[in-house]
Length: 167
Image 1 (cartoon, one colour):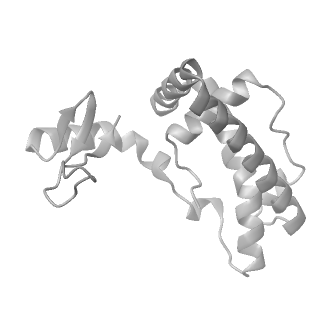
Image 2 (cartoon, rainbow, N blue to C red; image 1 turned 90 degrees about the horizontal axis):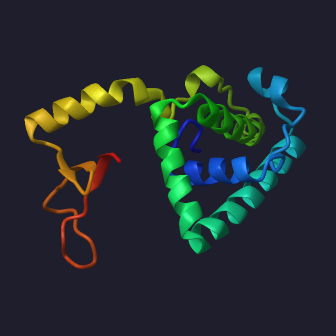
Image 3 (tube, rainbow, N blue to C red; image 1 turned 180 degrees about the horizontal axis):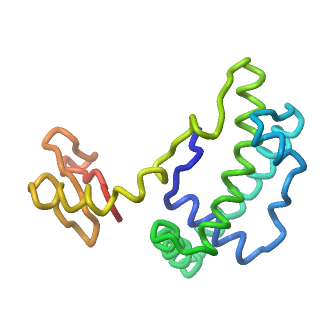
């Protein structure tokens, strides 16, 4: 699962939702999810809704350069802590949890919110981590991003592929 992650796909989803309000209806399962409970039916409904939104936002992202630019800007806003963007992201996280907790329950797994930490959980540490990586020479700036290059990680063209630490 990707609970707590954020990246281009979330910029795309958030921007799409901002431009198409009401497309993500809150489920009645929110309180149950907080308690680590979610029905299979609610989980399937949540995943269906998220899949529909993802497909619609992806199609727009792939076909509209202006939307793509807005979506990428939205990722920067998200990682910078913009309140509106964070609130929209949280809606996607909450909707995702309805599905994930229904699966966890089906597998008889006891998992709670405190057990789940995605990349967003480390955002407060990112600036210091970047500073240390850059000062030590492990990471370098490439096309505006902070990247780490390894000699043995190459693309199809044989050129080194950057592992992006921060966009």
